[in-house]
Amino acid sequence: MPIIAPSLLSANFLNLEADCTMLNNSKADWFHLDVMDGRFVPNISFGLPVISAIRKATTKICDVHLMIEEPGNYANAFKDAGADILTVHIEACPHLHRNIEQIKSLGMKAGVAVNPHTSIALLEAIIDDIDLVCLMSVNPGFGGQSFIPYTLTKIAALKQMILAKKSSCLIEIDGGITLNNAASIIHAGADILVAGNTVFKSANPTQTIEALKLIGE
Ligand code: DX5
Ligand code: ZN
Image 1 (cartoon, protein in one colour):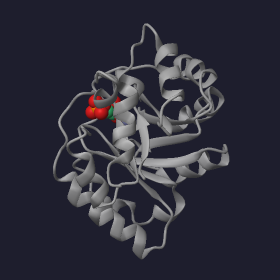
Image 2 (cartoon, helix red, strand yellow):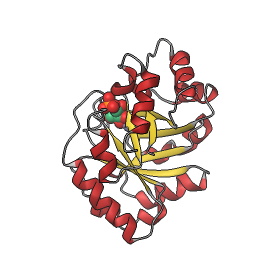
Image 3 (cartoon, rainbow, N blue to C red):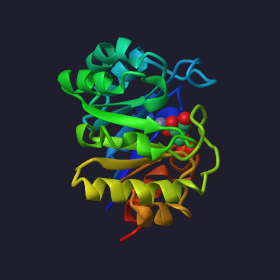
Image 4 (cartoon, rainbow, N blue to C red):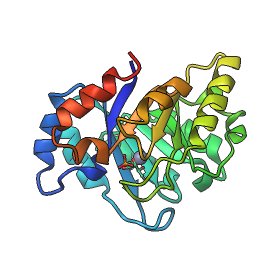
């Protein structure tokens, strides 16, 4: 079964507690928390105080996706805020190996996100050192965009790389996932589905999470 990680970017910011309770009582595995700085991506979302508050509202895994420049300056702060997994963008990290070592030394799982145009070949040298790869299936910055079909080719190639290296690294797909395309994404080799609009804009988010969880069964 896939790991389901609803993105709170699409939650109701006027009542985050209600959405946290809904997720706690659902089959959601992780909370996916999207941090944007207005520099790495052309949007600003939320940051440390909001993540600290969400941390107090759940015991589920907090999967923090940093869409920010110079993430190494903030790894400590995100650990203190309660991140279990910290994912940085390869495009924002000229010293990626150092960033990964820093995240792990702080006691968090380390993820690396790659934009739609970025080749997964760049991951070959570090795949053994990381816990997950987040393949962006939209250009990061906004919820509610359409899934980029070429992502399926990248998932399959990344899965081959992981198997060849006998790595335990997980494949997370982020952006534009719907109940219609989730099966093909899992079939291509994805382990984790991030879903924002599909969950939070649906009539019954709890049921939508369960439906995502059961896809591929
Ligand atoms: C996009 C974020 C995603 C986003 C997904 O920059 O990283 O996590 O919230 O939202 P949907 O599922 O609506 O595309
Ligand atoms: Zn994300």
